[in-house]
Image (cartoon, rainbow, N blue to C red; front, side, top):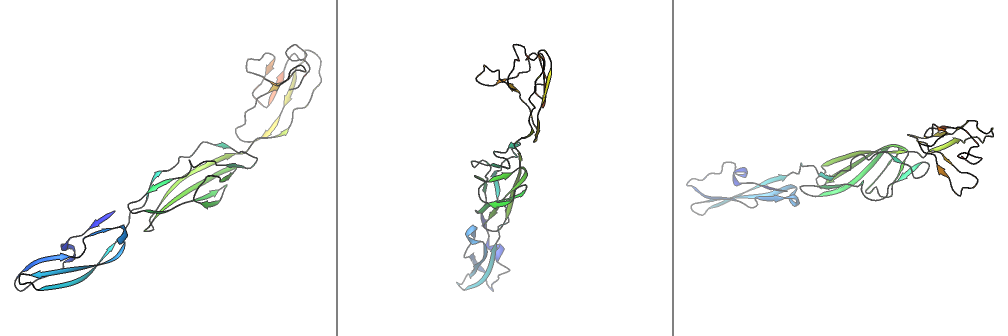
Length: 232
């Protein structure tokens, strides 16, 4: 940024018994390198060539805060990559800022489920829960701006009760139940016959099945070709 002054801003009623020929100042243009107090000399010359000078102090102030040119929006909820944390990989949650002079620092502060400070979120582990990320841009004059967003991490589901193996008569219906902890859980059931090499997903249009996408599943007509003895 720049600022300019004129002689009229410095001159405070200079006069002469004859007449003044010229009034000049030693410096009229200022930039960010001139922040603070600057000595400016006012020189007054009359028609006879007589000269008088006066020293003035011009104080240059930067009151414009930095502007974020890249401030991430709040991402959708993310799943932890282990039981308790999610580690951010990459710089997409970092910020960019500009200033009329220059940005001296870009730092973040984490509050909520995760706490900490730093200059890059690449490699930072976020705890399960909601963390508020506050980025602060500071310029050389101490002006600041903030960029704020939140990161919500859902913990991995944990199965606390496994389905119980059952033995029943051919043609009967059996129920299997699983109990798990977590947020926004969905369920998918699979089965494997003794002759199968891998598990097969139970789909919504599977016959002899109820509640295929809940924590409880009902299998009818056990012992049939579809559901002989096997593993669910």
